[in-house]
Image (cartoon, rainbow, N blue to C red; front, top):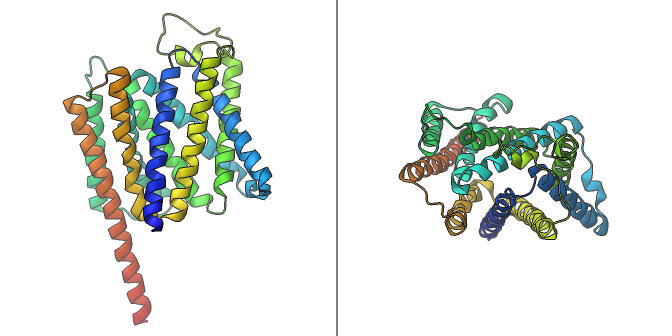
Amino acid sequence: MSNRLGIYYLVSGMFVFVFQDIIIKLLSEKVNLFQILFIRSILTITLVLLFLKISKQTKLLSTSNPIIIAIRSLTFFVGFTLFYYAQSQMPVANALTLFYVSPFFITILSMFVLGEKIDLGHWVIIILGFSGVYFITNPNFQEFNYINLLPVLCAMFYGVFMVLTKKYSTTESSFAQLFYLSLGSLLASGILGLIVGDGKFFSNNSVSMNYMLREWNFTNTGEIVLIVISALCGCIGSFLLLSAYRIGNPSRITPFEYSGLIPTIMLGYLIWDDIPTKNTWIGILIIIGCGLYLFYRQNSFSDKSLKKSINRTINN
């Protein structure tokens, strides 16, 4: 029952995150990216503090690893800044699928940071999975677009974030993690806002970069409302995601994170007429297929290791 409820929470969370990303892409045509992240961070921090104050659980914000928290917050902010920028320049389904290579980075980084073992089979799956990036980006070396690689870089930064979380944050509450991630985003976006927020670097000759260079504007009520809605989606999605992994077995529910791709493709078509090409579909199938198989193989490998350990204990 707990796994079934966990799957429900996880799928619901993925759907909510899709709406958040769609809203942010819609805003990219008129609002500065760092302004969006700044307002979202303020609202998230306010909601977390309000909840902890009402429930008298402010002690949940305590942490013993401030340096690690700072590093994690920075990697998270940089990663998703790259993702949201890339998403503004390419179909949302492409950006999300390229981000789905994150399990491959997590597996590789776990070998160095967590000391986990990776056999030859894992490496074959990882290399094959990364080949899916080639099909989606469809590189033409005469007209190479670096933006296609930004979601992959986001996946790498996210991998660093997840591995550090697994190694150092086992004693932190979910509220503490959400609070400090938002605090880091608030500080980073605020500093960048002071640098570029007056629009002095804005140029009509650099349309793609204007998403991060246009002047901050707080006078458009409709835009502010959309930013607030995206922030609420982020909070609700985070709550559902954290709840899913709290009550469900990660080995059973994690594959359902890929469910977010379905509504992303549908909304991308309905709003922007984005239709995945043949190569994109091939890339999607390769990345998700390899991701699922990697997940299955890791669980099988862990189960075998556990059984061997139990047998050694019994025999001794």
